[in-house]
Length: 143
Image (cartoon, rainbow, N blue to C red; front, side):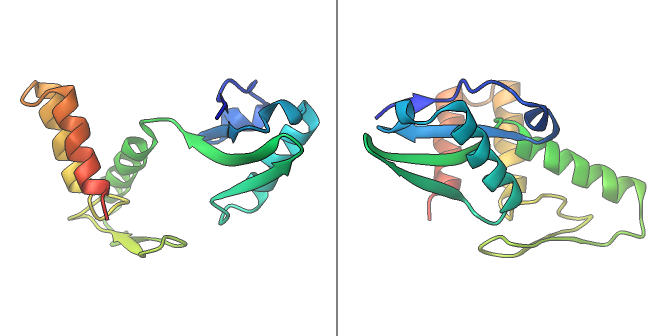
């Protein structure tokens, strides 16, 4: 399986927290115009997790590739909102498989946000190794 994460940045990629990620056997079949159209589809249909493109060379998976710290940025923004505006008592995230409401007492987009933040702090302090942090993150993500 081939992977192409080195897609040239467009104006849109600077305005959103993700870039297009293509994986699969059909990457060579996708030209720049098709790539741009696929990117636009994912921008327009934000509720769609990804696409599977069928090509003469095989199937190709098209998804959004978020930077590793985007969830930390979201949590930081939520904390700032609650800190700076006492009138805001909750922010509900729509469209998630399990709806989630962040609150001043639990200012995380994920129900496991507090646990993720604790792991990140422990790793930053050196209390756990990077491998231990990755294992802990994986345990949280497991169904």
